[in-house]
Image (tube, rainbow, N blue to C red):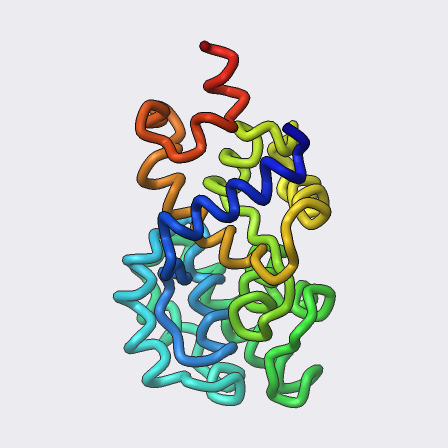
Length: 211
C-alpha cells in the first residue's frame, strides 16, 4: 500500500473512532489558546486547564497581559512548571501582539513563531483550530504514530511536519493530529501498544512484519 493510501485510510478510521476529536485545552479565543498552549510545554493539559481560568480572569487580552506584573503571572501559573520562563514569555507575547500585530493574534505560522516562546507546534495549533487553515501539529503521539505507520522515518518535528503536509488532506490534517493524540494515549502507546485491538493493525507495517 502506498503511503498516501495508508494515510487516507488512517484518517478515515480514526475519524470514525473519534468523531468529536478536539483540542483538550480549554479556551474561548485565539489569545487564550496561544497562552494555554505555551503553558502546556512540559505540563499536562489537565493542569493547564486548572490554571488558566484565574489567569484569563485577570489577563483576558493581549493588552492586559502586556501590562501585567510578571510576579503576579508567576504566582498564577506556578504549578505549570518552568513558571518563571513561561511568565516572561506570556507578558512578552502580549506586548508583541500589541506592538507588532495591532492587538490581534496573527494567523500565519511565520508570524506566530516570531512571538516569544512560540514554536511551530503551538503555531500550527492556533492556525488550525482558530483560523481553520491546514495545519500539522507534531506532538509526540503524532510523530510516533506516523513512524509506526511507515509514513515517515524520523522523529524530527519539522521534517515530520513537512512530510505529512504532503500526505494529509488539508481539510482534515488538523483534526487528524487531535485524533492521533487520543489514539496515542488509548491504543498506540509508547511502550506497550495495544496492537491486537488496533483499528490500524492491518495497514501498520510494524504489525505486518510480525505476522
